[in-house]
Amino acid sequence: MAKSIHSMIRVLDEQRSVDFYRDAFGLDVAERLDFDTFTLVYLSNEESEFELELTINKGRTEPYALGDAYGHFAVSVDNLDAEHARLTKLGLDPNKIVEFKRDGELIARFFFMTDPDGYKIEVLQRHGRYK
Image (cartoon, rainbow, N blue to C red):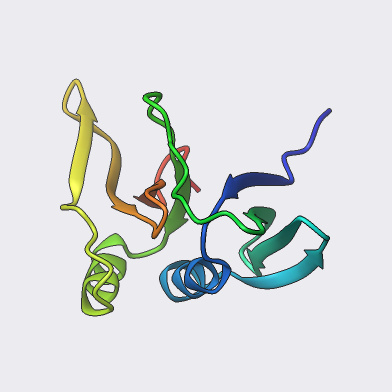
């Protein structure tokens, strides 16, 4: 079986992105690999072996076009309300909390926020399939 190990996004400013993901989700630099034309930064925390890979292309000054396909990175938390309040206090501007139901049954509680490069992040309450 295949095992998911990381997802990659291209970012413009390495330190701004590292700071954002550390402050927002407790992701720290697990490894940084520097090459002539690009740098790879792997972020992780003790909650999961899965990593977020930041790719920084040296010399790039223009923001990346994210396209018109809606995609996102997702994390789960124990206390959604407390995380929403903490992120708001940090000035990271999370969207409102949404309850997603089907036939009256709660499927998920979540909110979205946006990283410094415009990528969407879904923050879900740990519940059901969102562990």
